[in-house]
Length: 95
Image (tube, rainbow, N blue to C red; front, side, top):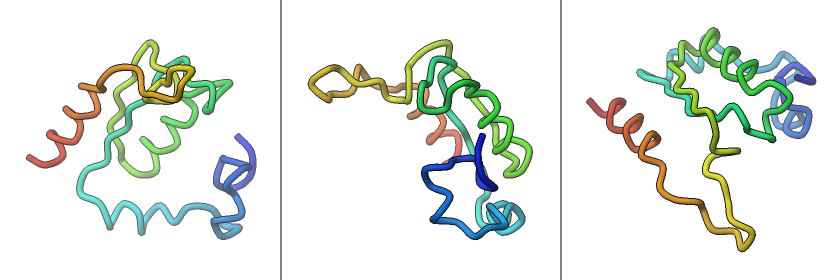
């Protein structure tokens, strides 16, 4: 990961000190993550990014073996199938 927020491409959108984790934790009741191990956007190690949010935001993670940068896309820019795991995570948060 690069920069204080962990994502060089978006670092300019955040203060130099990085994410305000206590403020984030106080603003949400439940935090869920859905990530695929073959996510090329979060490469080389998608789990490093998941761990960051799990530790600092108190998030619960669901890790899929594949799915790319969810949802994965066809060559003509259409999502590949539904994401029942994402729907379930939203429903879990609404309970």
